[in-house]
Image 1: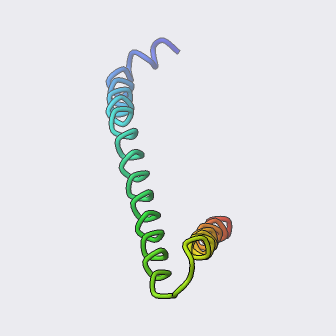
Image 2: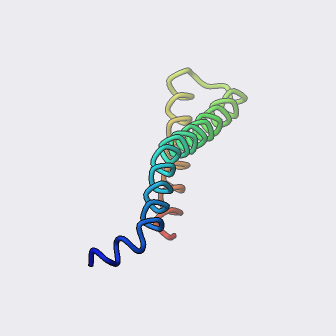
Amino acid sequence: MMEWINENSGLLSLVAAIAAVAGIFVPFIIRWLDKKEKRQELLEEYDIRKSMDIFPMSHEEREFYAQREILKNKLKKIKKLDKE
């Protein structure tokens, strides 16, 4: 076993270096993807609230219908993810 490790020490070092580099970049990629997803959710919510402005209704009614549409969109996304 020790002989095999000595023969392949260069390969093991390379694998360790790649793992270290991946360990540095993966959190940044995850953060970037989370920001992108959050931005998309905010844009969808903005569009829903903007579309509600054209209807004459009280603030409470507008808030109720907007929240309902936002929840519908979130449920659609969850269903889509469950199917995959």
